[in-house]
Image (cartoon, rainbow, N blue to C red; front, side, top):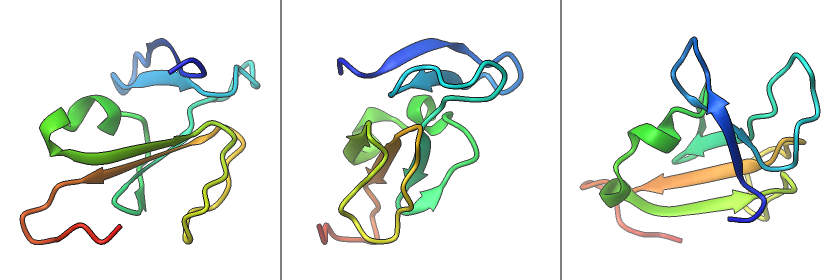
Length: 92
C-alpha cells in the first residue's frame, strides 16, 4: 500500500511502528488507530499477531475517517480488522 510505511519495531512492545500519514510528532507515536472487530487495540501488535487465514477483511483509512458508524476519526489514520469467528456470520 503506497501510503503505509513500517518504520521500525517498538523496543518495548515488539509491535511495528506504522505511519499512514507521515511522522507528525518527534516524541509521540504516529501509529494509526487499530480496531479488531470494533474494539480499539492498545497498540499495532494485532497487525502481526493475527494469522492471515483469520482475517476476513482489513480496511485502511489513511485520512482517519471511515463511513462506518462507531469509529471516531483519527489524525494518524485508521486500520479496521475483521476476523473470522466460528460463531458469527458475515453481516457486512
